[in-house]
Picture 1 (spheres, rainbow, N blue to C red):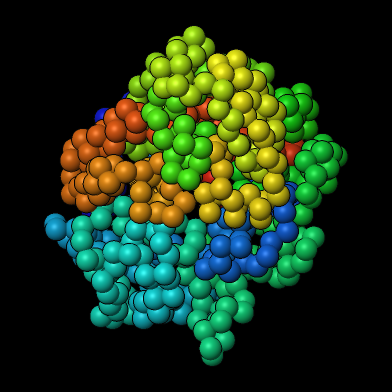
Picture 2 (cartoon, rainbow, N blue to C red; picture 1 turned 45 degrees about the vertical axis):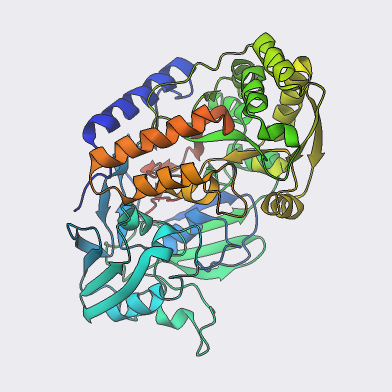
Amino acid sequence: MMGSVHSAKRWRMAVLSAVTALLLTGCGGGGETGAGDDAAVPAGGTLRVALGQPEADLNSLSYKTHSFNVLDQIYEPLVRYGPQGKLLPGLAQTWEVSSDGLTLTFHLRQGVTFSDGAAFTAPVAKTDMQRWIGDTPFLGISRTIAAVEAPDDATLVVRLKSSYYPAVQELTLMRPVRFRSPNSFDSAGNFVKPIGTGPFRLESSSETEIVLVRNDTYWGGRPNLDKVLFKVIPSSQARLAALKAGEVDLVGGEYMAPLAPEETLDLRGQSRVKVLTEPASTNLLLAFNTTTGDSALADPRVRQAVNYALDRQAYSKALFHNLARPATQVFPASIPYAPQQPRALDLDAQKARDLLAEAGKSGRKLRLILDPGMLPQARALSEAIQADLAKVGLEVQIDQLDTAAYTEAAAKRRYDLLFYRTYGPPYDPFAMLNGNFRSTEPAFLYGSPAIDGLIDEALAGTTDEARAAAYDKVWAALNDSWAVAPVVELPRVWAVGAKVRGFELGVTEYDLPLTKVGVAG
């Protein structure tokens, strides 16, 4: 059962919609997605990549780790997420899913070793998988696996308790499903060193830099680069200055060193820098706390009023410099099974005022919690939304918190409003629904028993048609209940220095393909 997780027809529609949006908003910079393709790729060299924050560790079982693109160089999955959602071979060459969806059989590549020389075999894979099975709530397959078997060194069998169509796709994720060497752990099972089967291995790691060197025994062929140096540069201004000066070669990405729209525009004017973009794969949402927040938010008319009060066009133009576009659905159309048509959510302040008056909720004061680190323009966007809601009769208090305090407040539902960014592929739509739209999840954004049942129906579908129909019911239920307020669709943006050759964006923001990249000079 290799191949797409959705029908070709739905994907053609999604891709056409995304490309059209890219052309209309001008966020493509000519639609460039690769760098240095017009010149030969020189052998060897060191690629210097900007990293916005230091890494706590490089343990792909740890949720302290945030630099997915670093992990992608070290660890590999059974299956990879490819263009247009097609699932491609990774450490498994082929696989089959039984007709009832309960048995996944993976045929592993032979002769693969970890960078320390240990063999990658089915028994090793089974032991490593057992480190996270049943202990990762957001991951549906973690809860669904009944058993993992290794009948021989080359065959891995995963048996499920119930049909769960995203199971194979979830095995493409960066954490926790990628494989670690047995020597990554001590005798007590504690993680001690990052060792994977990937194209690079760790040489050193500190608060200021991570140095990876080529894995000369890599099964996929000898990587071109000698080293990849991830330089920690917390200041966005310093990162841009370093890129312009040729002190780093690569900046950008949601999880590496995000570029603000004004920074992107600045870099487009630099002769020695190339800006690479892709259409939106994530949406920024304004979420409501309908359970422990202000009681007014439990009324769908209030949530509807907020949706009509938001001037999405103005946000896109003034705060995102037309590099983002207004969002009207939970997910952008490029996501598998996502709604393909925008909703009618034009600014209508009078309609918002009428809804609040009808609900008897005008004049309510709402608390918006904010972590400025989640988005370069988060503070400015908060203030713009604060002003728009004031126009319709809702007062918003903005509480700016540090990341730790924000995370705690969100988890314990101590807020009225907050921003939330969808995950993007390969997680969406199922992981976002599992973690954020189930009423049984402690920190859900919006949920109800009825929507829980619709999500279950979509995730259990055994045919593309059944899943598509079930997902359409989920979108209708979320829209009818005004579950969230979509704000903008966020494009992917990276910037590459003049010396880089052969670089192309990964299929998702979580992967960073570097095996064929070179650095001139």
